[in-house]
Image (cartoon, rainbow, N blue to C red; front, side):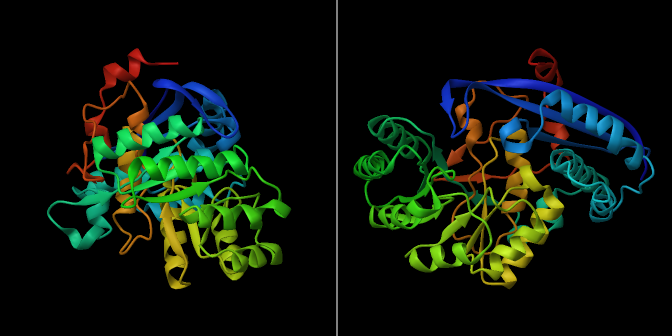
Length: 366
């Protein structure tokens, strides 16, 4: 297959309430959507969240990068093999967001050309007729009582059995948050904490132990993590696995963290692309390190792409974090997956493009 046409779309999806991340507060989530059409008539789509502090781009800069740097390269490629296409893209340094968007669209195009969904092509859950993937919900930073109230509501509404708690509000507030959330949801729901690197390296050991004592089964990014002897010492001192996220930006980083004793890696198809995510998963599993499918603020479209990757994990240590679309009041898809007993059933479609409401894309354009 050769590239015949491409389209890029920018839009924003509003939240029910302002969301406080570690670095920004936002009322809507910005996205860029890429559609690739081959000369054989098949099409593939992908979406990426565009936050400069998350992925180093704005919508405008990403569109320009794709059109000026990568599309001329893509027009020379045979699109039948997404892994080879990704290798071609990687000849250009940096530009992770552009590569991720193109990579994921190529996988969707590949599935469309073969007449089967990506998760079936990868052998997800032994190719069962129907596939349900367990998921979790992320509680963003609020006052402890507000986080607890949201936790109880989401568990009651969707049956979540695992919650990710966004920390970084100070040790006392984070401990209080864990206490309030545990009281609200009971002992049957697992909790783990993501501090988004809010604490110093000197504070990280004490913080991680305090979170473990408060019931966290895993602690993500207690400080800015780097794959060195300091990380090894920190993991050895922590009674639960440290989940490495922001410090792991590539397959090479993943290997370096594993060499230093990493017990869990956050693998994000919406950050790395499906090709790299698969390679990271393979490396982690071979090394006895647990892969966790991480959150990148996805809408329904990005969620469904990421869940196809999550379906390939044989025995996930934690559910996939891909439920953030529940925080949004708008979507560009005709389908919004229901979460029942903490699980999402993957739809059977050869391309996620079949689920897009193109009138909504136009209406929500930014």
